[in-house]
Length: 200
Image (cartoon, rainbow, N blue to C red; front, side, top):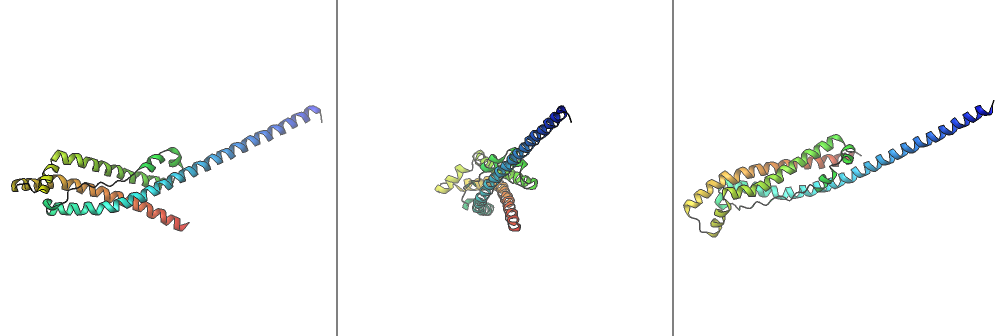
């Protein structure tokens, strides 16, 4: 066997070893990056679950208040305590998680459920914001304070009842719908999470 043949075999062998080393390094690096992304997605999800738990607590407090207010408004607006009492729900953890790392490393059905739930969040917050503007537009609050002061005439009371029925009742029907829908969506996510944890 000539020196030239030995030299080429040795060169091919070294080239194979270097190429294999590079490929192994690339695979290891890709695996490490993927594991890092999975950890990040898990941290985002933990933050979202904590936020959901907080929002459930808030909604469970405000929803009965708004249901009672709606009932009082339907029965007699003059005796209702007209206070908006918005639900201070948050979506910070969800906004932080709206990235490709979280989306690509989270179960598709869970991501879809979270996305739908936080859409309800946005609808509720917008409803709450619109309510104050609508009240001002309908001039409900001014007569309400006259009522509280005891200076409202019978004609004003009748007008107030009509305006409250036209203004407040539809607003709180919408408000309660989104509070209930959002709360239900969040509770279902937590129930599935706890059910999945119990199976693992």
